[in-house]
Length: 268
Image (cartoon, rainbow, N blue to C red; front, side, top):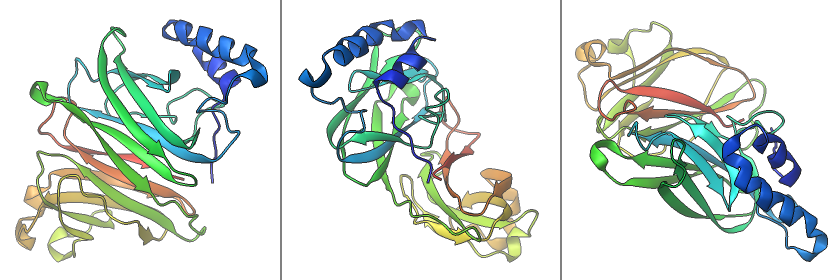
């Protein structure tokens, strides 16, 4: 399993490249100088830990480009639609998830263009040994930006298998049938891999053989002969390597509504 531990020194390395992080640098330096007189920060791997990632699914191009601050420490910068962190961080901090000390935590999202503007404040709990994805959703037509949190069960897959799941975050799509098939397979003859999947539903992990697949989404209950003409989302060629885990996220476009899209997160 890919592991990551974002501690104070590594945070400083990332922050020095970005003017937005100057205020955070002062906090980091001050905390580090205190030595054992200061309690461990939430991103220091010195106690019980869970793992966390943030995913930007904000459908508002004004509020949707954000900096993420986790417990007053930089966690991601200039995150655009469908981007996640720590996957978007510079090496050596790049990883699917970040190790965070257990307890009640807070993630604050600031507009990248104006960091005096708070887009959302997301409280959440970190549980020992548990992986969580925190999605920021909403925003279209000035709607509220709210969190959607999933618990990600991430046991290792053998080299001969891939673990894949779907998170449905497209309000425009409504309930859908999802097909994971060989590339170019006839939808009329296919059986839905997942049926009648509702908005904000999270599937369990499916186990498939390594290979390249096509993922297509149609309105739930579409007649077999009409499926090809009613594909709302099409991932034409998704290459899956053995021993990995992936989350496929169904989403609106960056402003909300159609055309719909999907993007893929690396869980392992």
